[in-house]
Length: 245
Image (cartoon, rainbow, N blue to C red; front, side):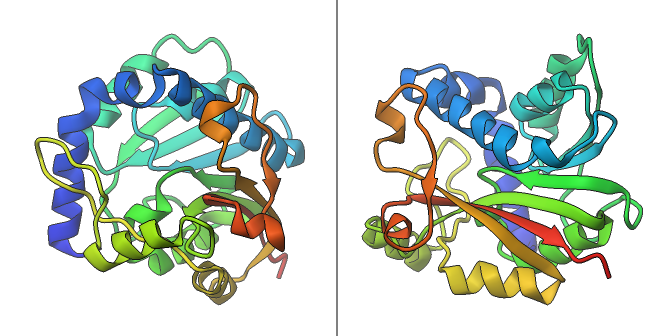
């Protein structure tokens, strides 16, 4: 990740940390998003795993999903660029009654984990913020065990939201900011994320989409993100598996 983008992302999330959960997930639409993300984790990740499985979360933020994953009895390791966000996550996870969780502040480069050390990895609302996402995919593939899964989402450029995606890609930053400024962001075509996965030996298994009405409907169900469904998926959620050999 370029130094200026990395530093800007850190500044943005350090400034956002104390209000992040209230701004993002305390509203009605935020609570629906939280439920939607957890529903997808249930469907796309947990079904494959034994209770003692080890998971890696990229961009763990304030620990919203770390807490949920650990509550299922798993061992989860979260990484994030922001010490401010990580500190809130540590406080949140201090009272865990099941599973285990640890957090590492990480700002790019080689992941500080051993080869073949995780059964699954996931990244929700993260990959679009990483300009060198191909290198990140390589690192995820390295730390996954053979047969392990990588679950993530990206904003979908080939959708009815195409004009917004083009605007973001032209600016190379999000449309919203805080006191620290903007974050880098990128909307993806399927060709981009498919090529990055193939280059590191990860094979696409399942696609799910976030429908346009997700923020307005309680207990919204994901849609098939292939064919016509791709057109209506604002965000595409991808499950890929590391080849056994």
